[in-house]
Image (cartoon, rainbow, N blue to C red; front, side, top):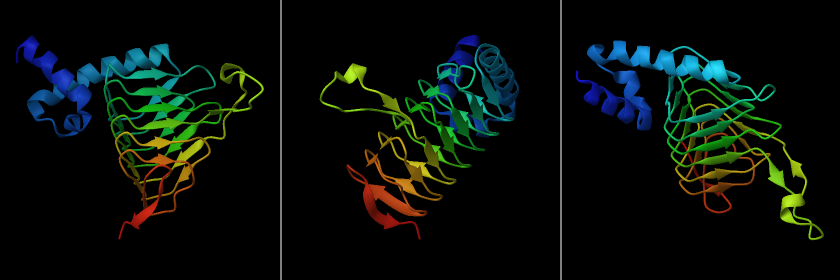
Length: 200
């Protein structure tokens, strides 16, 4: 394999990390070595813990100051241009697709095993006050945290606001804005999101 082809293949994996987990044996060795370098560099610079068998795009932006740790569970995948800011805990086999944005605020985000966060989804675990007697930039910031269960799918361009819990097996439709808790197994859509069906 030429260096040019390998570089292109690395870019492909960065944007479509699910391909990493089904690589042919002839690609597995160099891809694992490449990932070991990427992950070692990240953990040397940020307060990040990475489990076994993960894929982390070198183009992902992951920031974790002391006290705002990012924990990435075994088998998780993080794609190019994803933005992750702790405190954040990702369970096993979680995937964060390209350009998704997750900020744990002060209270943090916890995501259960086998959950999928699609392209450009946004989860922000903080909010600003809206009092009319002061500028927006001077408003106090609160953080209650976000909890996402196991086997959840959050669709492309969906948003999840601070204080929300999305229970196991739920689905959030593309473009939905979730402002209230989502029951287990529910399918929600719209702005603000409402239950529109159930997985059955």
